[in-house]
Image (tube, each protein chain N blue to C red):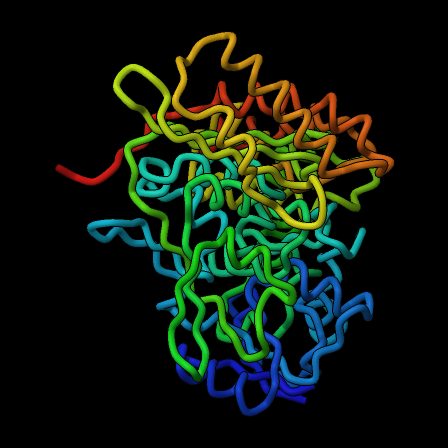
Length: 280
Length: 154
């Protein structure tokens, strides 16, 4: 196996293009899979020394998070806490301190486990993904990317994420078998805009329900533009249970998750925090 | 093979390693630092915890190449029998060591916490140690030991 340690994004993309290499982000998934012999790359491109990929910054319209930002970086970022609350919440419970110190948001997407903790919040927040390759820069909604198979064409580097700054409430909750170090059995991220005293657009994303995290269109439709009260919550719970029922079908975990999602949805709603939007 | 440079416990090493080798393998097999334990080998148990550039990581999930030019602290760099670290001293005094397999990782997670936050709350101690599993003690004595080390530092 050849091991490259590029110093810039351009160098990384060039190597990936010419050598057909595999990118190494934090390694918490890939190193394990290599150790088990499930993935044996011939060329490994370690992105760890490219500092520009690790930046978390704010522009006029969005919060930009580089693909190599770790869960610790995000979990300690005031900017993420204030303007991407659902993601910040997910960073507090993902893995363990050791895993959070190493695992990256880009790696979370690249590995794309059904239970990836970072993806439901990004979906609910309406994030775009920035993809880089020798052909140039491409930006598209994460929700669209997650519908593609394979996820990424060869030689494509996940550059980072752009989360639009919206004045809205966002939250996240997950169900694990224990408090720390638990792989999500179920996760729910919610974003809720306001329209006067009513709820405006609502986005709900689910994780560990099916092959990949997804944004639920039926939930967005049935929960948007209503009064925020107990009957809205009850409607949400009924609807989210329906979505899980449909997504899981006859799978062994279905009877459990169908019921459990009620509590996780309720917790996600309870975790809603008002996050700042555009600075005015 | 590839060449890497590591600073382990303040000592610089230049090593020829296989790119597949994990930091854990390099520390144990090449440098003979057997205090870093391999438990699950999957990043669950924290027995292989080391401090890498000021952050705890599971050495079983880090390739040696990723640690290029990094400063690493293993349990051998924390203290010794003659001069134990306050966390080690407290572990002995409180009786927080039973079989001892998780202890190096526990001590490193605790040391790293106290380096950054000398007066942690009980909850902060719990979170800092949440990536280290112990099958013997039931954790209570470990938590007490870390608290005691923090108090003695005052």
